[in-house]
Length: 339
Ligand code: KG4
Ligand code: ZN
Image 1 (spheres, rainbow, N blue to C red):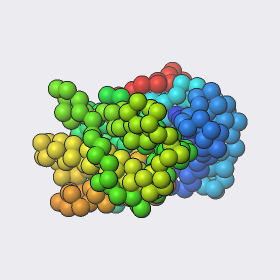
Image 2: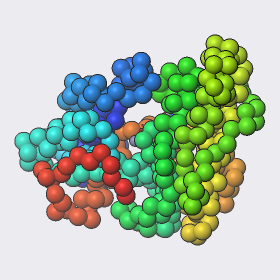
Image 3: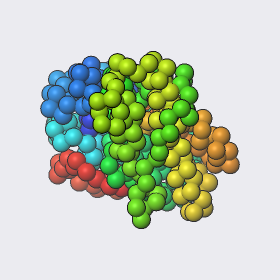
């Protein structure tokens, strides 16, 4: 079964063709980082306009690279949320138009769930269920138990910024540009991760939840002083910047690892599936492997940790097998959806 996946929830316009939920025939991603860099984050209206400009060429390219045509597609899968409303609408309406014009079934896919499915795409065997899912992206930080594909219990989330957002905001404070995650990671390689005494966030009465806004303020104070006038970015040496990036990265990564492992232990799970752009981070992967050698860690394969449409097509295939008579033209975009 050939599935055409479409993704436009944030700042990547993506289309992919995937056979039987696993074999990626094409995976095209048109990134918009160039237009959002100036703002240090995603500018929603500009994101929607760029999606509208490039979505058809991106779909055509995905079909061409897969050496196929719309006629040979069996199902269209599209991300319906969570995401930016205007951005989601472009992908969703394009998918509906194609479905109607070409008489193909259409299925709506949850973007967060698809991030986790990405970790299974290069696997010959699925993990032992139940397992733990961890999504770390620009918009989400959540840990949940997965009993099987499509069945989840949410166990922890962020109460303010998402982890990727915190990386992006700290990068903005350090004047590193957008997206911040890869730039912080690169800078942190030459820094002392224990130089700055930053602290992980603590959520009262919900000790497994995350809060990243405090540590971001901690970085701001380290740069500008407590009252904002003691020093400026320009007075921070290059080495201080590296130390600050390394200290921030260490604290947030250790926080994620400790909470995830606590949850996995409590639930008696031996496998952890990861998804989302932040799981690209090598330091995170290395520290997880060091701290949990007994766990089976499923990282998304290359090209599937950041937003992409292969994960949408892959998960869409399974959803269609489980529920072939799903809704189609009535699918609505949703800015917030939980699992
Ligand atoms: O999954 P994604 O493409 O977008 C959402 O669905 O939100 O993730 C993008 C996020 C950005 O915040 C970016 O800074 C972060 O992933 N990111 C990283 C790294 N690469 C991307 N964060 C930390 N380290 C990285 N190497
Ligand atoms: Zn994402």
